[in-house]
Image (cartoon, rainbow, N blue to C red; front, side, top):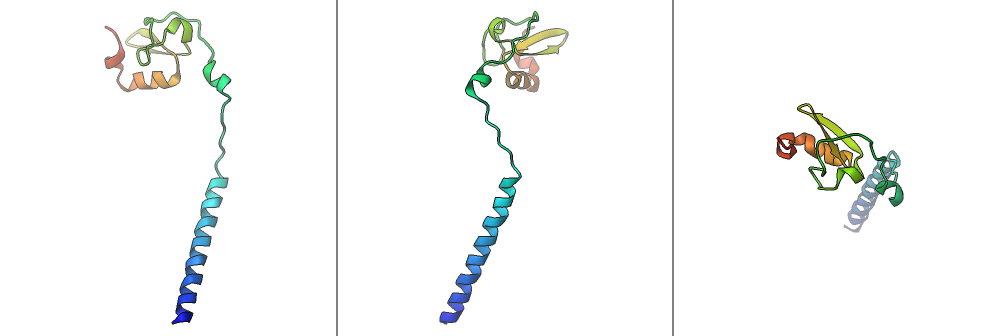
Length: 98
């Protein structure tokens, strides 16, 4: 009885050890980059004329924070970020002013 317990414990340990090894290899394939907070908050501002004074998603003033645009139904809309532009593109009728 004692011998079967030891065999079971050894098998469990081997299984656990091999699972940890395979996860470790997966994590080695990942590369994580973290932007400095100063770089995240200062995107390059575009110098174009857009139809909206406020970003339709987050309501930031486009005159101060314009960093991305999209043309929708012949009108150039401005956004503070690509994230806001992508949200707009999911439901443009909801956010465009006609």
